[in-house]
Length: 366
Image (cartoon, rainbow, N blue to C red; front, side):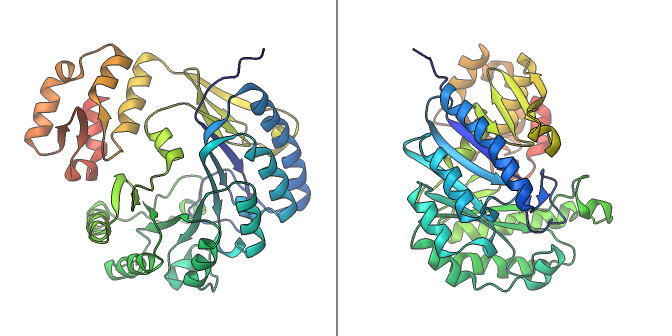
């Protein structure tokens, strides 16, 4: 009998987009029907291999790129395979751009088990949308009401920190989000990565002081509207956390399939080829890193301290065969004195102020 590996999460990367967003540094390609067909043939080979070698997953996440750009036939074929790989009661997420969502695709999503949708709105502000090459006229309230007919668990992505964006602009975006009456928001500060169009144009990130003002307002506003921050950039009502992303943030293993996708298995972090030609030619993993004891500990802090709840001290002690409170006694006392960390019910976590300056706290432990 074949013994299948047990890992909780599976990520699938669909790299195609109709437009390239100037802030994006993910692996992506402009939509081409011929390339899509070739890509899906290779992707299906990988998924069959995963199906044969792994137990069913607690969470499956289709990201990109723009997965929703696939036509109905291609979506049906892909989701038919993936539905069989999800455990009963598992979380099944797909990322979508607003302009791709229609009733036919939503019917397909529901039929094949997708129960969570993440919509990349990014901003409700027309000037910002033009700036990021996402200038489309969409009635978001009508769109979200349509989605709710088929999928109740909805996330929206927003970005803040654009050039010339004011606090008033941010407030309007957040007010519009709340009016959608959904249960999850992922909101990120704009980062200008080296592989992005913005970087090549010399676009500057928001300065640290303004970014802090924006972030503090976001946290305060969302809490007033019954959203709980459960991770640095993620807020949920009614405990509707992203199970898939929590698996990442708890530094657990995950399988990754598709061009440029990164995974973590058996103490190995790996990245698939970012070359479309190589991927089509059957070349997959191009980079592997065996995670040393030291690096594993670093990843543990980097991921777990992003979570509002932090980590269970007993879990740290068990994983690293160490006494956390004893080993880091002086650091913990210093940070507690400054009101940056707390210990509650056996968990070690950052305070509000600590999360706001998380990078500085991590330096203490790394």
